[in-house]
Length: 120
Image 1 (cartoon, rainbow, N blue to C red):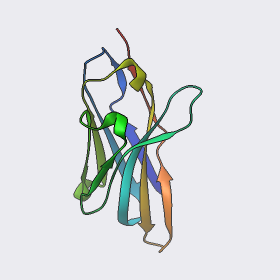
Image 2 (tube, one colour):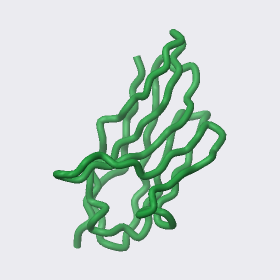
Image 3 (cartoon, rainbow, N blue to C red):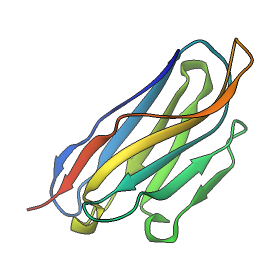
Image 4 (cartoon, helix red, strand yellow):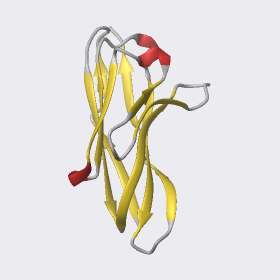
């Protein structure tokens, strides 16, 4: 079994910052790409940022320059530093990870999400 658990969400004022964390645990042999997504009410889930096992990153245009993705391979953890938050960033944020288990199966796993609300 593999689990991804997000943390760090909450209520923040416009212009503020939050740091999300997502820790993977369980029967893990190797983790390939990890990513952050979000889903606002009534909208489809959208990708925000991804990071390879080697540290290469990609960002969706609306968060470039404001959000930074990073990972700690020793801790099987991915982070999302979010600065200059805007009300339109309000959503449930999910992490994902492409994981090869010790049972030699490879799947894309998802966390359950953490709520981020940007409001004054």
